[in-house]
Image 1 (cartoon, rainbow, N blue to C red):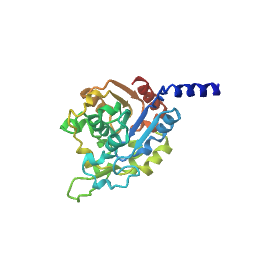
Image 2: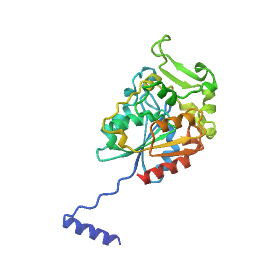
Image 3: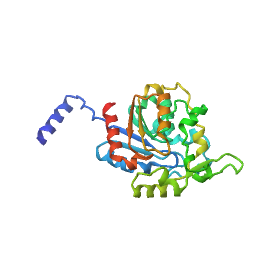
Image 4: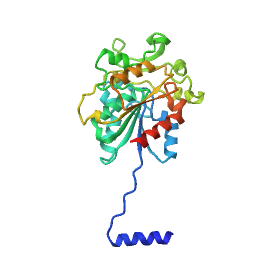
Length: 281
């Protein structure tokens, strides 16, 4: 059989008939939320790569192993630059990706679909901020910004950075370590929430609040959107997710019985949903 295969290839080469191209692997690009990093996808990445998918886990500016100080990152464009650079320069023009955003990573996904619609096969929002034009109205803020007042006053819940001075608005925030499991990872395995507590960094809150997207561009409306709800979420509450879904309806909505971090609390179910997305598009 091996010799026969070689002979066929030789005959094709002699006839100058090009060999058929190899099928392109489905490529997932996974984007973390505020304070996270590419590390938070380690379970999903392992499942995907073991199943033959191509996976890219990015660190946005000041996140993960990126060395930038989040207190110095004031604009959303600067914060999201690693994703935009990847799509504009690293990803070939002939390739499309499935772009997945978690939590505040939904803002990064929306920004990318406005700018590079032709390179995004489908956009997936996981417990994510999904606002067509970013934080433009008071309602956008109400829908898309976590309300953690159930757990105390702002300063009781967050460690706050004031990179522009104590009299200026905060430049970075991160949920206090003592509250992270209770708020973000309440049904995740203890070892995962322990790891996250060690790796979670302050996120550039001013940059995220400045997110604005112009309608138009390459046509974000052409990119199919999938929303994955997290029914036991204490960060992005289900009613907030539902409000964003009603305001900018995606093609499909799925629900996970998960806390805010399904890549820890429901990795196999989340992986299965993402595989279904890949098969459907």
